[in-house]
Image 1 (spheres, rainbow, N blue to C red):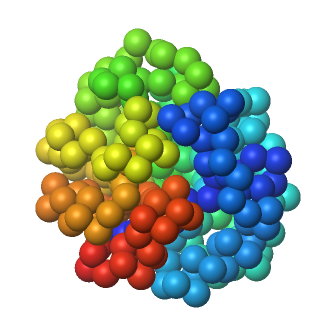
Image 2 (image 1 turned 90 degrees about the horizontal axis):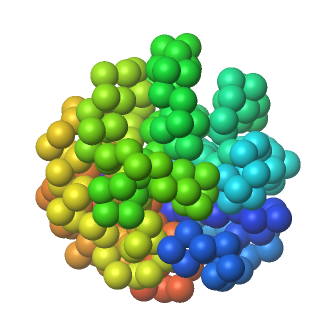
Length: 237
């Protein structure tokens, strides 16, 4: 089980939004490269990056910061936020990222997403963000009406690297992940499932591991000391 520390970028800085709300922001560090290097020094092999400005605007907005992280820090990096066309996918992969996360574009343009998955096998991750079982899009600003499990089953037929499931109601709340729905996803599809939203303690990680997830994304809990990265990595082993 992988632990993926998270860097959420807004105007080039490391921040966190509470429940995905752009009016509820916590700013942690000005330099995302320094933060990534700190995660690397603590033992992380993966880094999860979200371009919050990109998610809102529909196109990559923090490419300079992302490029600096990829150039200066030797980690496997996945990024989501504002990846809505083939050009954006290529731009991020050309920066040296390991894989790219598609959420809104996959949910709203599934036929196109199928084409991109075939074109970039093993390089795309499907990001499914939900309130309850209802999928959200556009930086969590829109409800789509789609169903989480039904959509995951459709997408699992594609050559994608993983599915990231985020329970929006728990994101940034330090309240623990949605174990029941995460376990449902694991049972529903053969694609690796990565849990996000509310992962706070070593016990959370242990429960997710028991549920069969392939990875857990941790953000606010690391920044505020609810768990250290070495503790998280140990729990994942």
